[in-house]
Length: 128
Image (cartoon, rainbow, N blue to C red):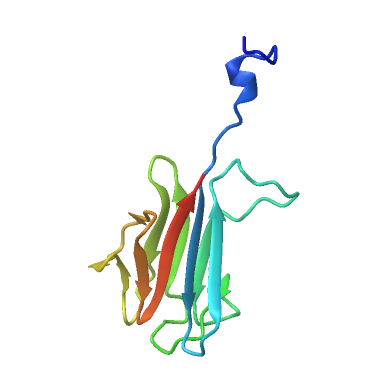
């Protein structure tokens, strides 16, 4: 028991990670994407299990106005044990994580890194 009369477990709140990806598109517009670890949603509507990035606003959760980004370029998804991951959706100009091409499999995203969709670059930050 602590001085407050509560056990240590009662004083601690579960820690959930939040990933933030941010970058500027070809028109200088800031694109920000925030993805919360499942179980950490605070609103009434939980987030979808994945997010599609691309140029086509009709089929993407976060449209990007960048000519080197495909209509449906990449998918972000939380995978238990790996965290937030990205997968290329057979894009024309590729998806890269910290300079390494992403091919078919999900690749985990780490804070301080970068995601490239064609020539569009997103900086990655993670907080708890």
